[in-house]
Amino acid sequence: MAKRLTTVLCVCIAGFMSAQAQTASSPTPAQIVKARQASLEMSAVTFGAMKQALAGGTAASELGFQAHALANWSAALPTLFPAGTGQGQAGVDTKAKPEIWTNRAGFDAKAADYAAATAKLADLAKAGDTPGFTAQFAVVKKTCDACHSDFKER
Image (tube, rainbow, N blue to C red):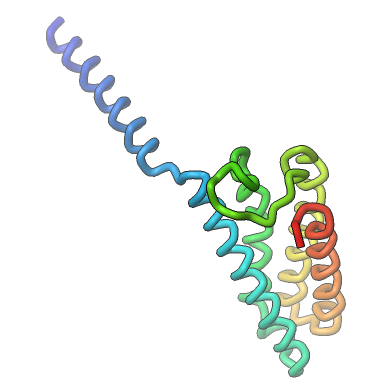
């Protein structure tokens, strides 16, 4: 009986400690906003570098890493906007419009369009299709701008 009670107690303590560790390591809303802002800035830098490379005649096959990184990031983008991280909520200024949370289905749809466009861009880079990549790059820009027009303060 004592052995069973000790085992149950150990399991309970381990569960409590695990819950405490998860709580202690969970990011604050302000940290989430800062991470979101940094990732958006990095995506803009990546996009700008690809634009310059294309203008300089770089082949799509040479832009695969950047295109793949942008596609991976865009798939995770909606998760960077959890409830409680809007303007006035996290203690950090943000350009995210309240419509991200009040029209979540619309935001998720625009984000899905962007993710699909960047995934196709990565596929075209992998295939070495420079003309297709260049055309798709314009589509990526358009889907990015479409989301910003509805969900980002200028």
